Amino acid sequence: MNFLYNKIYVNFYYIEKMCYKYLFFYINLEIKLINKINKMLYIVPTPIGNLEDFTFRALRILNEVDLILIENYKTSKKLLNFYKIKTKTKCYHIYNEHCITNYILKRIEKGEKLALISSAGTPGISDPGYLLIRSCIQKFIPIECLPGPTALIPALVSSGFSINEFTFIGFLPKKKKIKNWKYYPKKIGQ
Image (cartoon, one colour):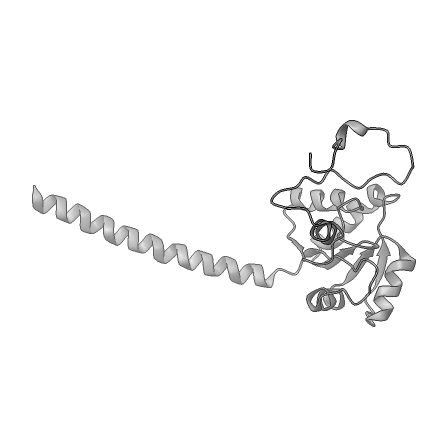
């Protein structure tokens, strides 16, 4: 009986060892395939105010992609000209995102790399972009969101409040009259 138990144990040990061997093989294969993927959507945050608040990685990505989707032509051209980025651009804003999302998805699926930038800050946060990002996720198109400038975190840090946790519910509307006060705290720190 003990001999049979040892033989079964040894067989499971070798089976487990072979499984790990194949698992590592498939992980390495997957990493190699990911590195060879041509199609990609990059979400690239842009400087808020100071054009020098831009990362080297964001600069490299904008130079490497096939097309840059821009929210505002005038603002984005200032940034692209400042860094001498010659990549082709196409407008992608709140007024046309529903119309051109399928066109953009087809370009990415053909193997192109595209970058999405907003006028200032990170696309998708109170800016156009969520529709394209959601569509890419549904079609299993790889997305890479770069870290970068944001207005929220510097505002929190410079407030002087203890920031162990916070909730972001959006930016205040530009109109003087705020319609839904129930969503905003009545006192600071509440």
